[in-house]
Amino acid sequence: MSFSNLGLSQPITQAIEKIGYEKPTNIQTQAIPTILQGEDLIAAAQTGTGKTASFVLPMLEKLSLESTQRKKRIRGLILTPTRELAAQIEEKIQVYSQNLSLTSLAMYGGVDEKSQKQALIDGVDILVATPGRLLDMYSQRAVHFDEVEILVLDEADRMLDMGFIEDINKVLSRLPKDIQSLLFSATLSHKVRDLAKTAVHNPFEISIAAHHASKKNIEQWLITVDKDKKSSLLSHLIKVNNWDQALIFIETKHGAAKLAEQLEKRGIEAEAFHSGRSQAVRSKLLEDFKAGIIKFMIATGVGARGIDIEGLNRVINYDLPFPADEYIHRIGRTGRADAQGEAISFVSKDNFKNLCMIESRLGHLLERREIEGFEPRKPVPVSILNYVPKNKRKREDEQ
Image (cartoon, rainbow, N blue to C red; front, side, top):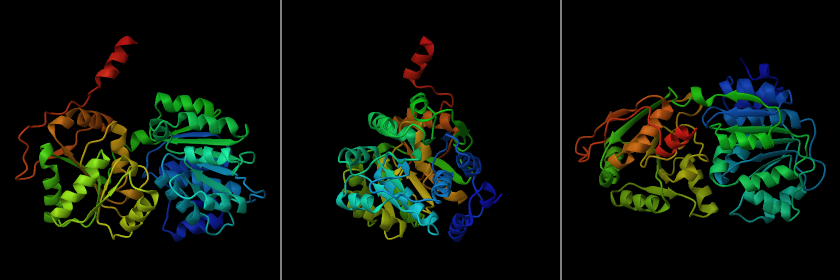
């Protein structure tokens, strides 16, 4: 099936063909016609499945017949949890709409708001925003919602995890009642479904996530290693395998800075990417990483949802994440658009519970390997595939 068969017009199909999109992904095949028909939608799909195009392309199609006429008004609103993701989505909008006269803006904190206010005065058709900055600009009367036609809540689960529920509800209460609402989330947890009851009315539901939790084009495996040997193991793997580039996930800002220093002492240049760095620095780091100038980037969880790099071959989980769904988002940074990718996790004995939860989420065990010279002194136990966290077991017993 081609994109034109989904109901997209020639200006849009020409733009996506130009960047190499040949056929729609599963989520795009299901979501695009539904959105074009005006239906509200709930979609469970994680990053790496073509999710962004599944809502941006039909939004462009629906809004392309007109343009925003009044100052400080918008017609399409996309709410997203992080600055990086907002910028990434807006970049995609610019590419997809290159043959259209629509305008777009990414609006988030950490940068001067004057240019954002001026863009809104000049006219914006589609606004991509983080909830906090959006409400701030709304309170300053820099943006009005009375002409919004389409709302997208992207990465809804992540926004809830980050504590944005009050901000989201404030935005929802100020929007017109007759808009089309679309909610995209990696998981449809109870919290997400509670939000959906408020945000989305009589929705069509699509679930892709369950079938793509473990993508076949991403080779996943783990290395058992003691915690105090992780840094030297990483250096060893980079040098012995002559790795060209890798995105390395770690849990804390302090840990990211410390690991970058340790690698530098061993002659490996790396940069730390985390929320403690200014937006200007983070934007520059992403730009250089995409261009291949930076070979190794050490990122905290902020990078799991906001880094979209075509051709990234390798993701390293230096620390195992919690909750388990965060693992899915992390490895989704590689193997984009069905390219081949590799996801390697360092696992020490103290990570055992996290490992069990991740493997239970995947539905299979990860291949274990040991590297000569780095065999763990404290062996990692055999995984429990049906592991259930203690607090969840307690809730189930009470029901």
